[in-house]
Length: 422
Image (cartoon, rainbow, N blue to C red; front, side, top):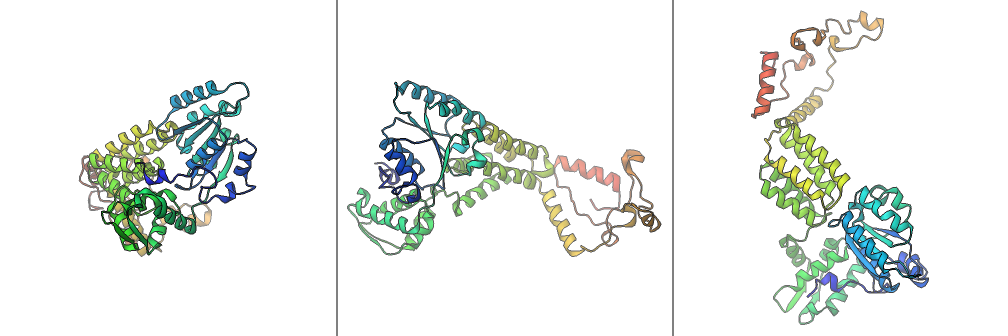
């Protein structure tokens, strides 16, 4: 049996829940069907609001061939293959096929550029779906050839209507006695997402009991116990991201890859994953291996350049490297200590010898007096006080016990001798 969300997928505009500002009488998509003409469009909205359903409805009601690609799984090769099929389907004045690309923001520039001429010459009508602002995520050249339509989250009232419709008509509930006593948890956890609502009700219907009373406690319990309910905007999102970072910190590449795969499979934005790795490279690896931060930063650039599906390999390489790297949080602890000192002793004056003598008056006031230029001394170092008088000798950075920072410790001890306690 198909998943409940697929069984409930609307077949006509009248079946579609919400989006009346686009699909209602006299609105732009209703007129497109009546006039048998649809421009290339970008459907921008949160997950589970009907972007894919709307594309299929338009193709069906306009009687157009329909091709679908996922930007997560497809590259330029797949795009070109579909475009070739579309060209072969056009005869004489036959209307252009519709190419639907889900998560089009995941395509990089070259992948999006591959669509330009086909959209411009009418080989296909492009319908792209994105959860991200197309102004930032879709190439300007492609965006200029498309209309952008904004889809809204499903209202609480419409979610409730959909719940009642599912319980009344879906085969999954046919042989069960269902009482919808409380709806707050359903509405809250669905969070404007019809697909998520279907997934939650499918969990409810999977219970062995023939008689089920739907109350908030039951819904929360079922969702909490089902780890597959990944929610990019909810608690599970942060729990899995936390497990990912802690696996890197714990030097476990296997767990690191598993939790990253869970995020990818759940539709997480790759840039979110890379940002977490950049933070981990600085916070958890730090000076034990400074190259980790360079690699994580390069990973962000590479993911933006390459796009999906190849970028998953770049994410994997970076995640494995971070997990297997030596660890140190000394830089993190040092800035925390420095911020604490700045708050506790924030009014300390800058020592006169460290001040710039910009004017003659400043020179008379001994600004810059006795400052010694380090590059004029052996090893480009001269022992001098750089902290305020009240904080003299305060050690803020403590090198961790790893090979890289042991070298740093030895160098600092050699330079500063008994000045700081390293």
